[in-house]
Length: 94
Image (cartoon, rainbow, N blue to C red; front, side, top):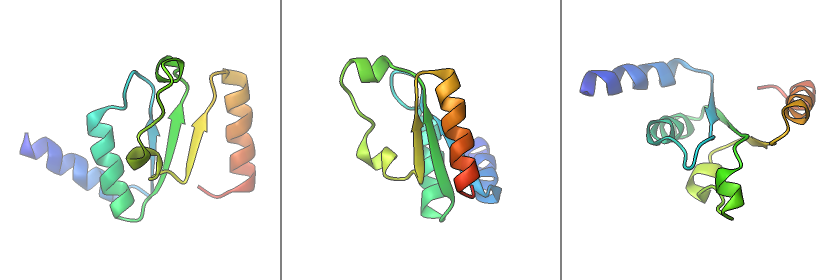
């Protein structure tokens, strides 16, 4: 197991950005660890949430997770999400 963690850590450290998919009932535990590592090492972190399961139950993202993101994209409509991403990329550098 330590070998898997070490390889994952090395890959996160090589990355310029981290883009985390937050779909599912709760965020993936491993992805949360990667997010923490990336954030602690001044990587730009972005989130994408298109799943309404937690929204329907009136649950928000934990602020310890959402606070790491430069930008959190939350859109349940695929076409509008693409427009939002395109607009963000036109106005900002990743």
